[in-house]
Image (cartoon, rainbow, N blue to C red):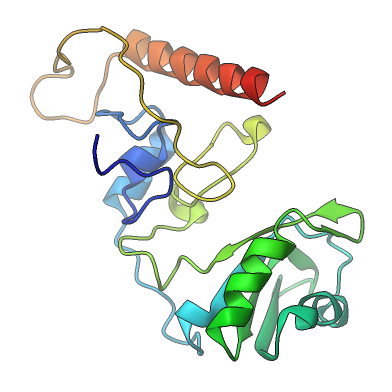
Length: 208
């Protein structure tokens, strides 16, 4: 446990699907999908990933001009890309902002996180796609964060960091689904989901 960290240093879909990063079996089929994905970052994306921030949970009506107005106060912006649907042109609710200097990135990540922009509290973090080894996006079952309603929470990021593991006293893990196939015990899956929900609820209670 000496090297434990609430933030993932390498992306592991199996760990990302667990509230404390200790699961040894996937608890949903999306995690299986992410584990089997062979994702490669988009080579068409330009700029320095270490100077780029990922801003999400944006108001669908927030514009590029509004983002530039808000985030330029932290430093000079090199590039700003609000991701839009290629068919409708509507915002997908997230953007990438590249700064010219590292100190601007650090300042914006620190001070702009949970800032309210157009009545939405936004989340600001470093870009993960090109900077975090092993990254798998949400559309392939990976990603980070998420909302409870979606049923696909992913941990290890700033939005939902890993909770420190506790000693559950469950004894050694037993193998399930003999034969090496991708079948696992449904009751065990439900137990893990109940455990994760309980831990999440306890964390919310402790935060209040």
